[in-house]
Image (cartoon, one colour):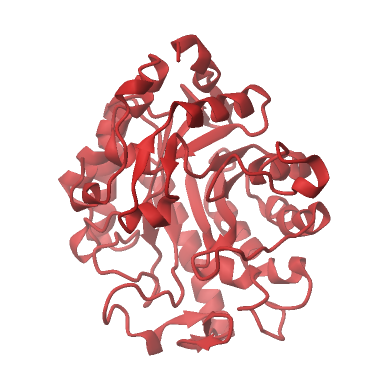
Length: 375
């Protein structure tokens, strides 16, 4: 593929205070290399290498708010406390020294326990005390829990701006806490945080966004990552029609979300093929059409073989010129504004430069073994 074929990916992008050299985003990908929640020099160097190799915007691995059970592995980084925030200051200074742009993704994993005894399952919190439909785990959040959680998200966002990050992203996808409030099978609450309508179940996310928006300057972009699918159920859907999607997304934008990061397992799949066909708009495309705000698409970019959950389990993937071509085709139509790349950038820090140069044959495939180190 000649380099001219990929130039649509390398247009500048500007929104509020954010100015990017290209349309490529490093997707948040959990790495668990922060002992006791503190990112060290190795984490700073890991992100700096991506900045040095022209990733337009780096979004960090998930970092957790100040809640007792907000993470499910001891080496996931915190975004609270003097030691962790000092570590993140080192990260963003390193990225800026390489002329990069970066934001932390801040999250709360609810009751999705992935590490033995961290935390104990019975101590975890969630909207209604369910980890998947019909399966109880932990406890339902009280009004006080909810208020404290909203405040913790806002505090983390304020700290992100204070440390010098360029954006902040909220994790509202993949079956974690914010997403569990959206999901009717897990949000069974009968108070103001639940209800049969999507807009009712979106109230918690909207209040988080509102609090975050109030805690940072007007020019600081606030991103929220969203998904239809959940790690608990790949086939789950919050919105089955464009009208339902509008009911879901518009309150989030009204609350202050600037950019919607729309996660799919495969970015080229249409969201509503029954409406616009097999080549129709994907999730990010519909989100942009409905809300009018910029969107980020993501999902198996530039790779063939297993999707990301399968490849983490060891299934084979390979770098794909056809996948890049699919991406360019959609970007040329301005279906979405930015594209996030995950596994490919974990394996190959030079991915962006190779794509820009048309050196698709030099791209490295992702392998599970890569997870054992910070390349």
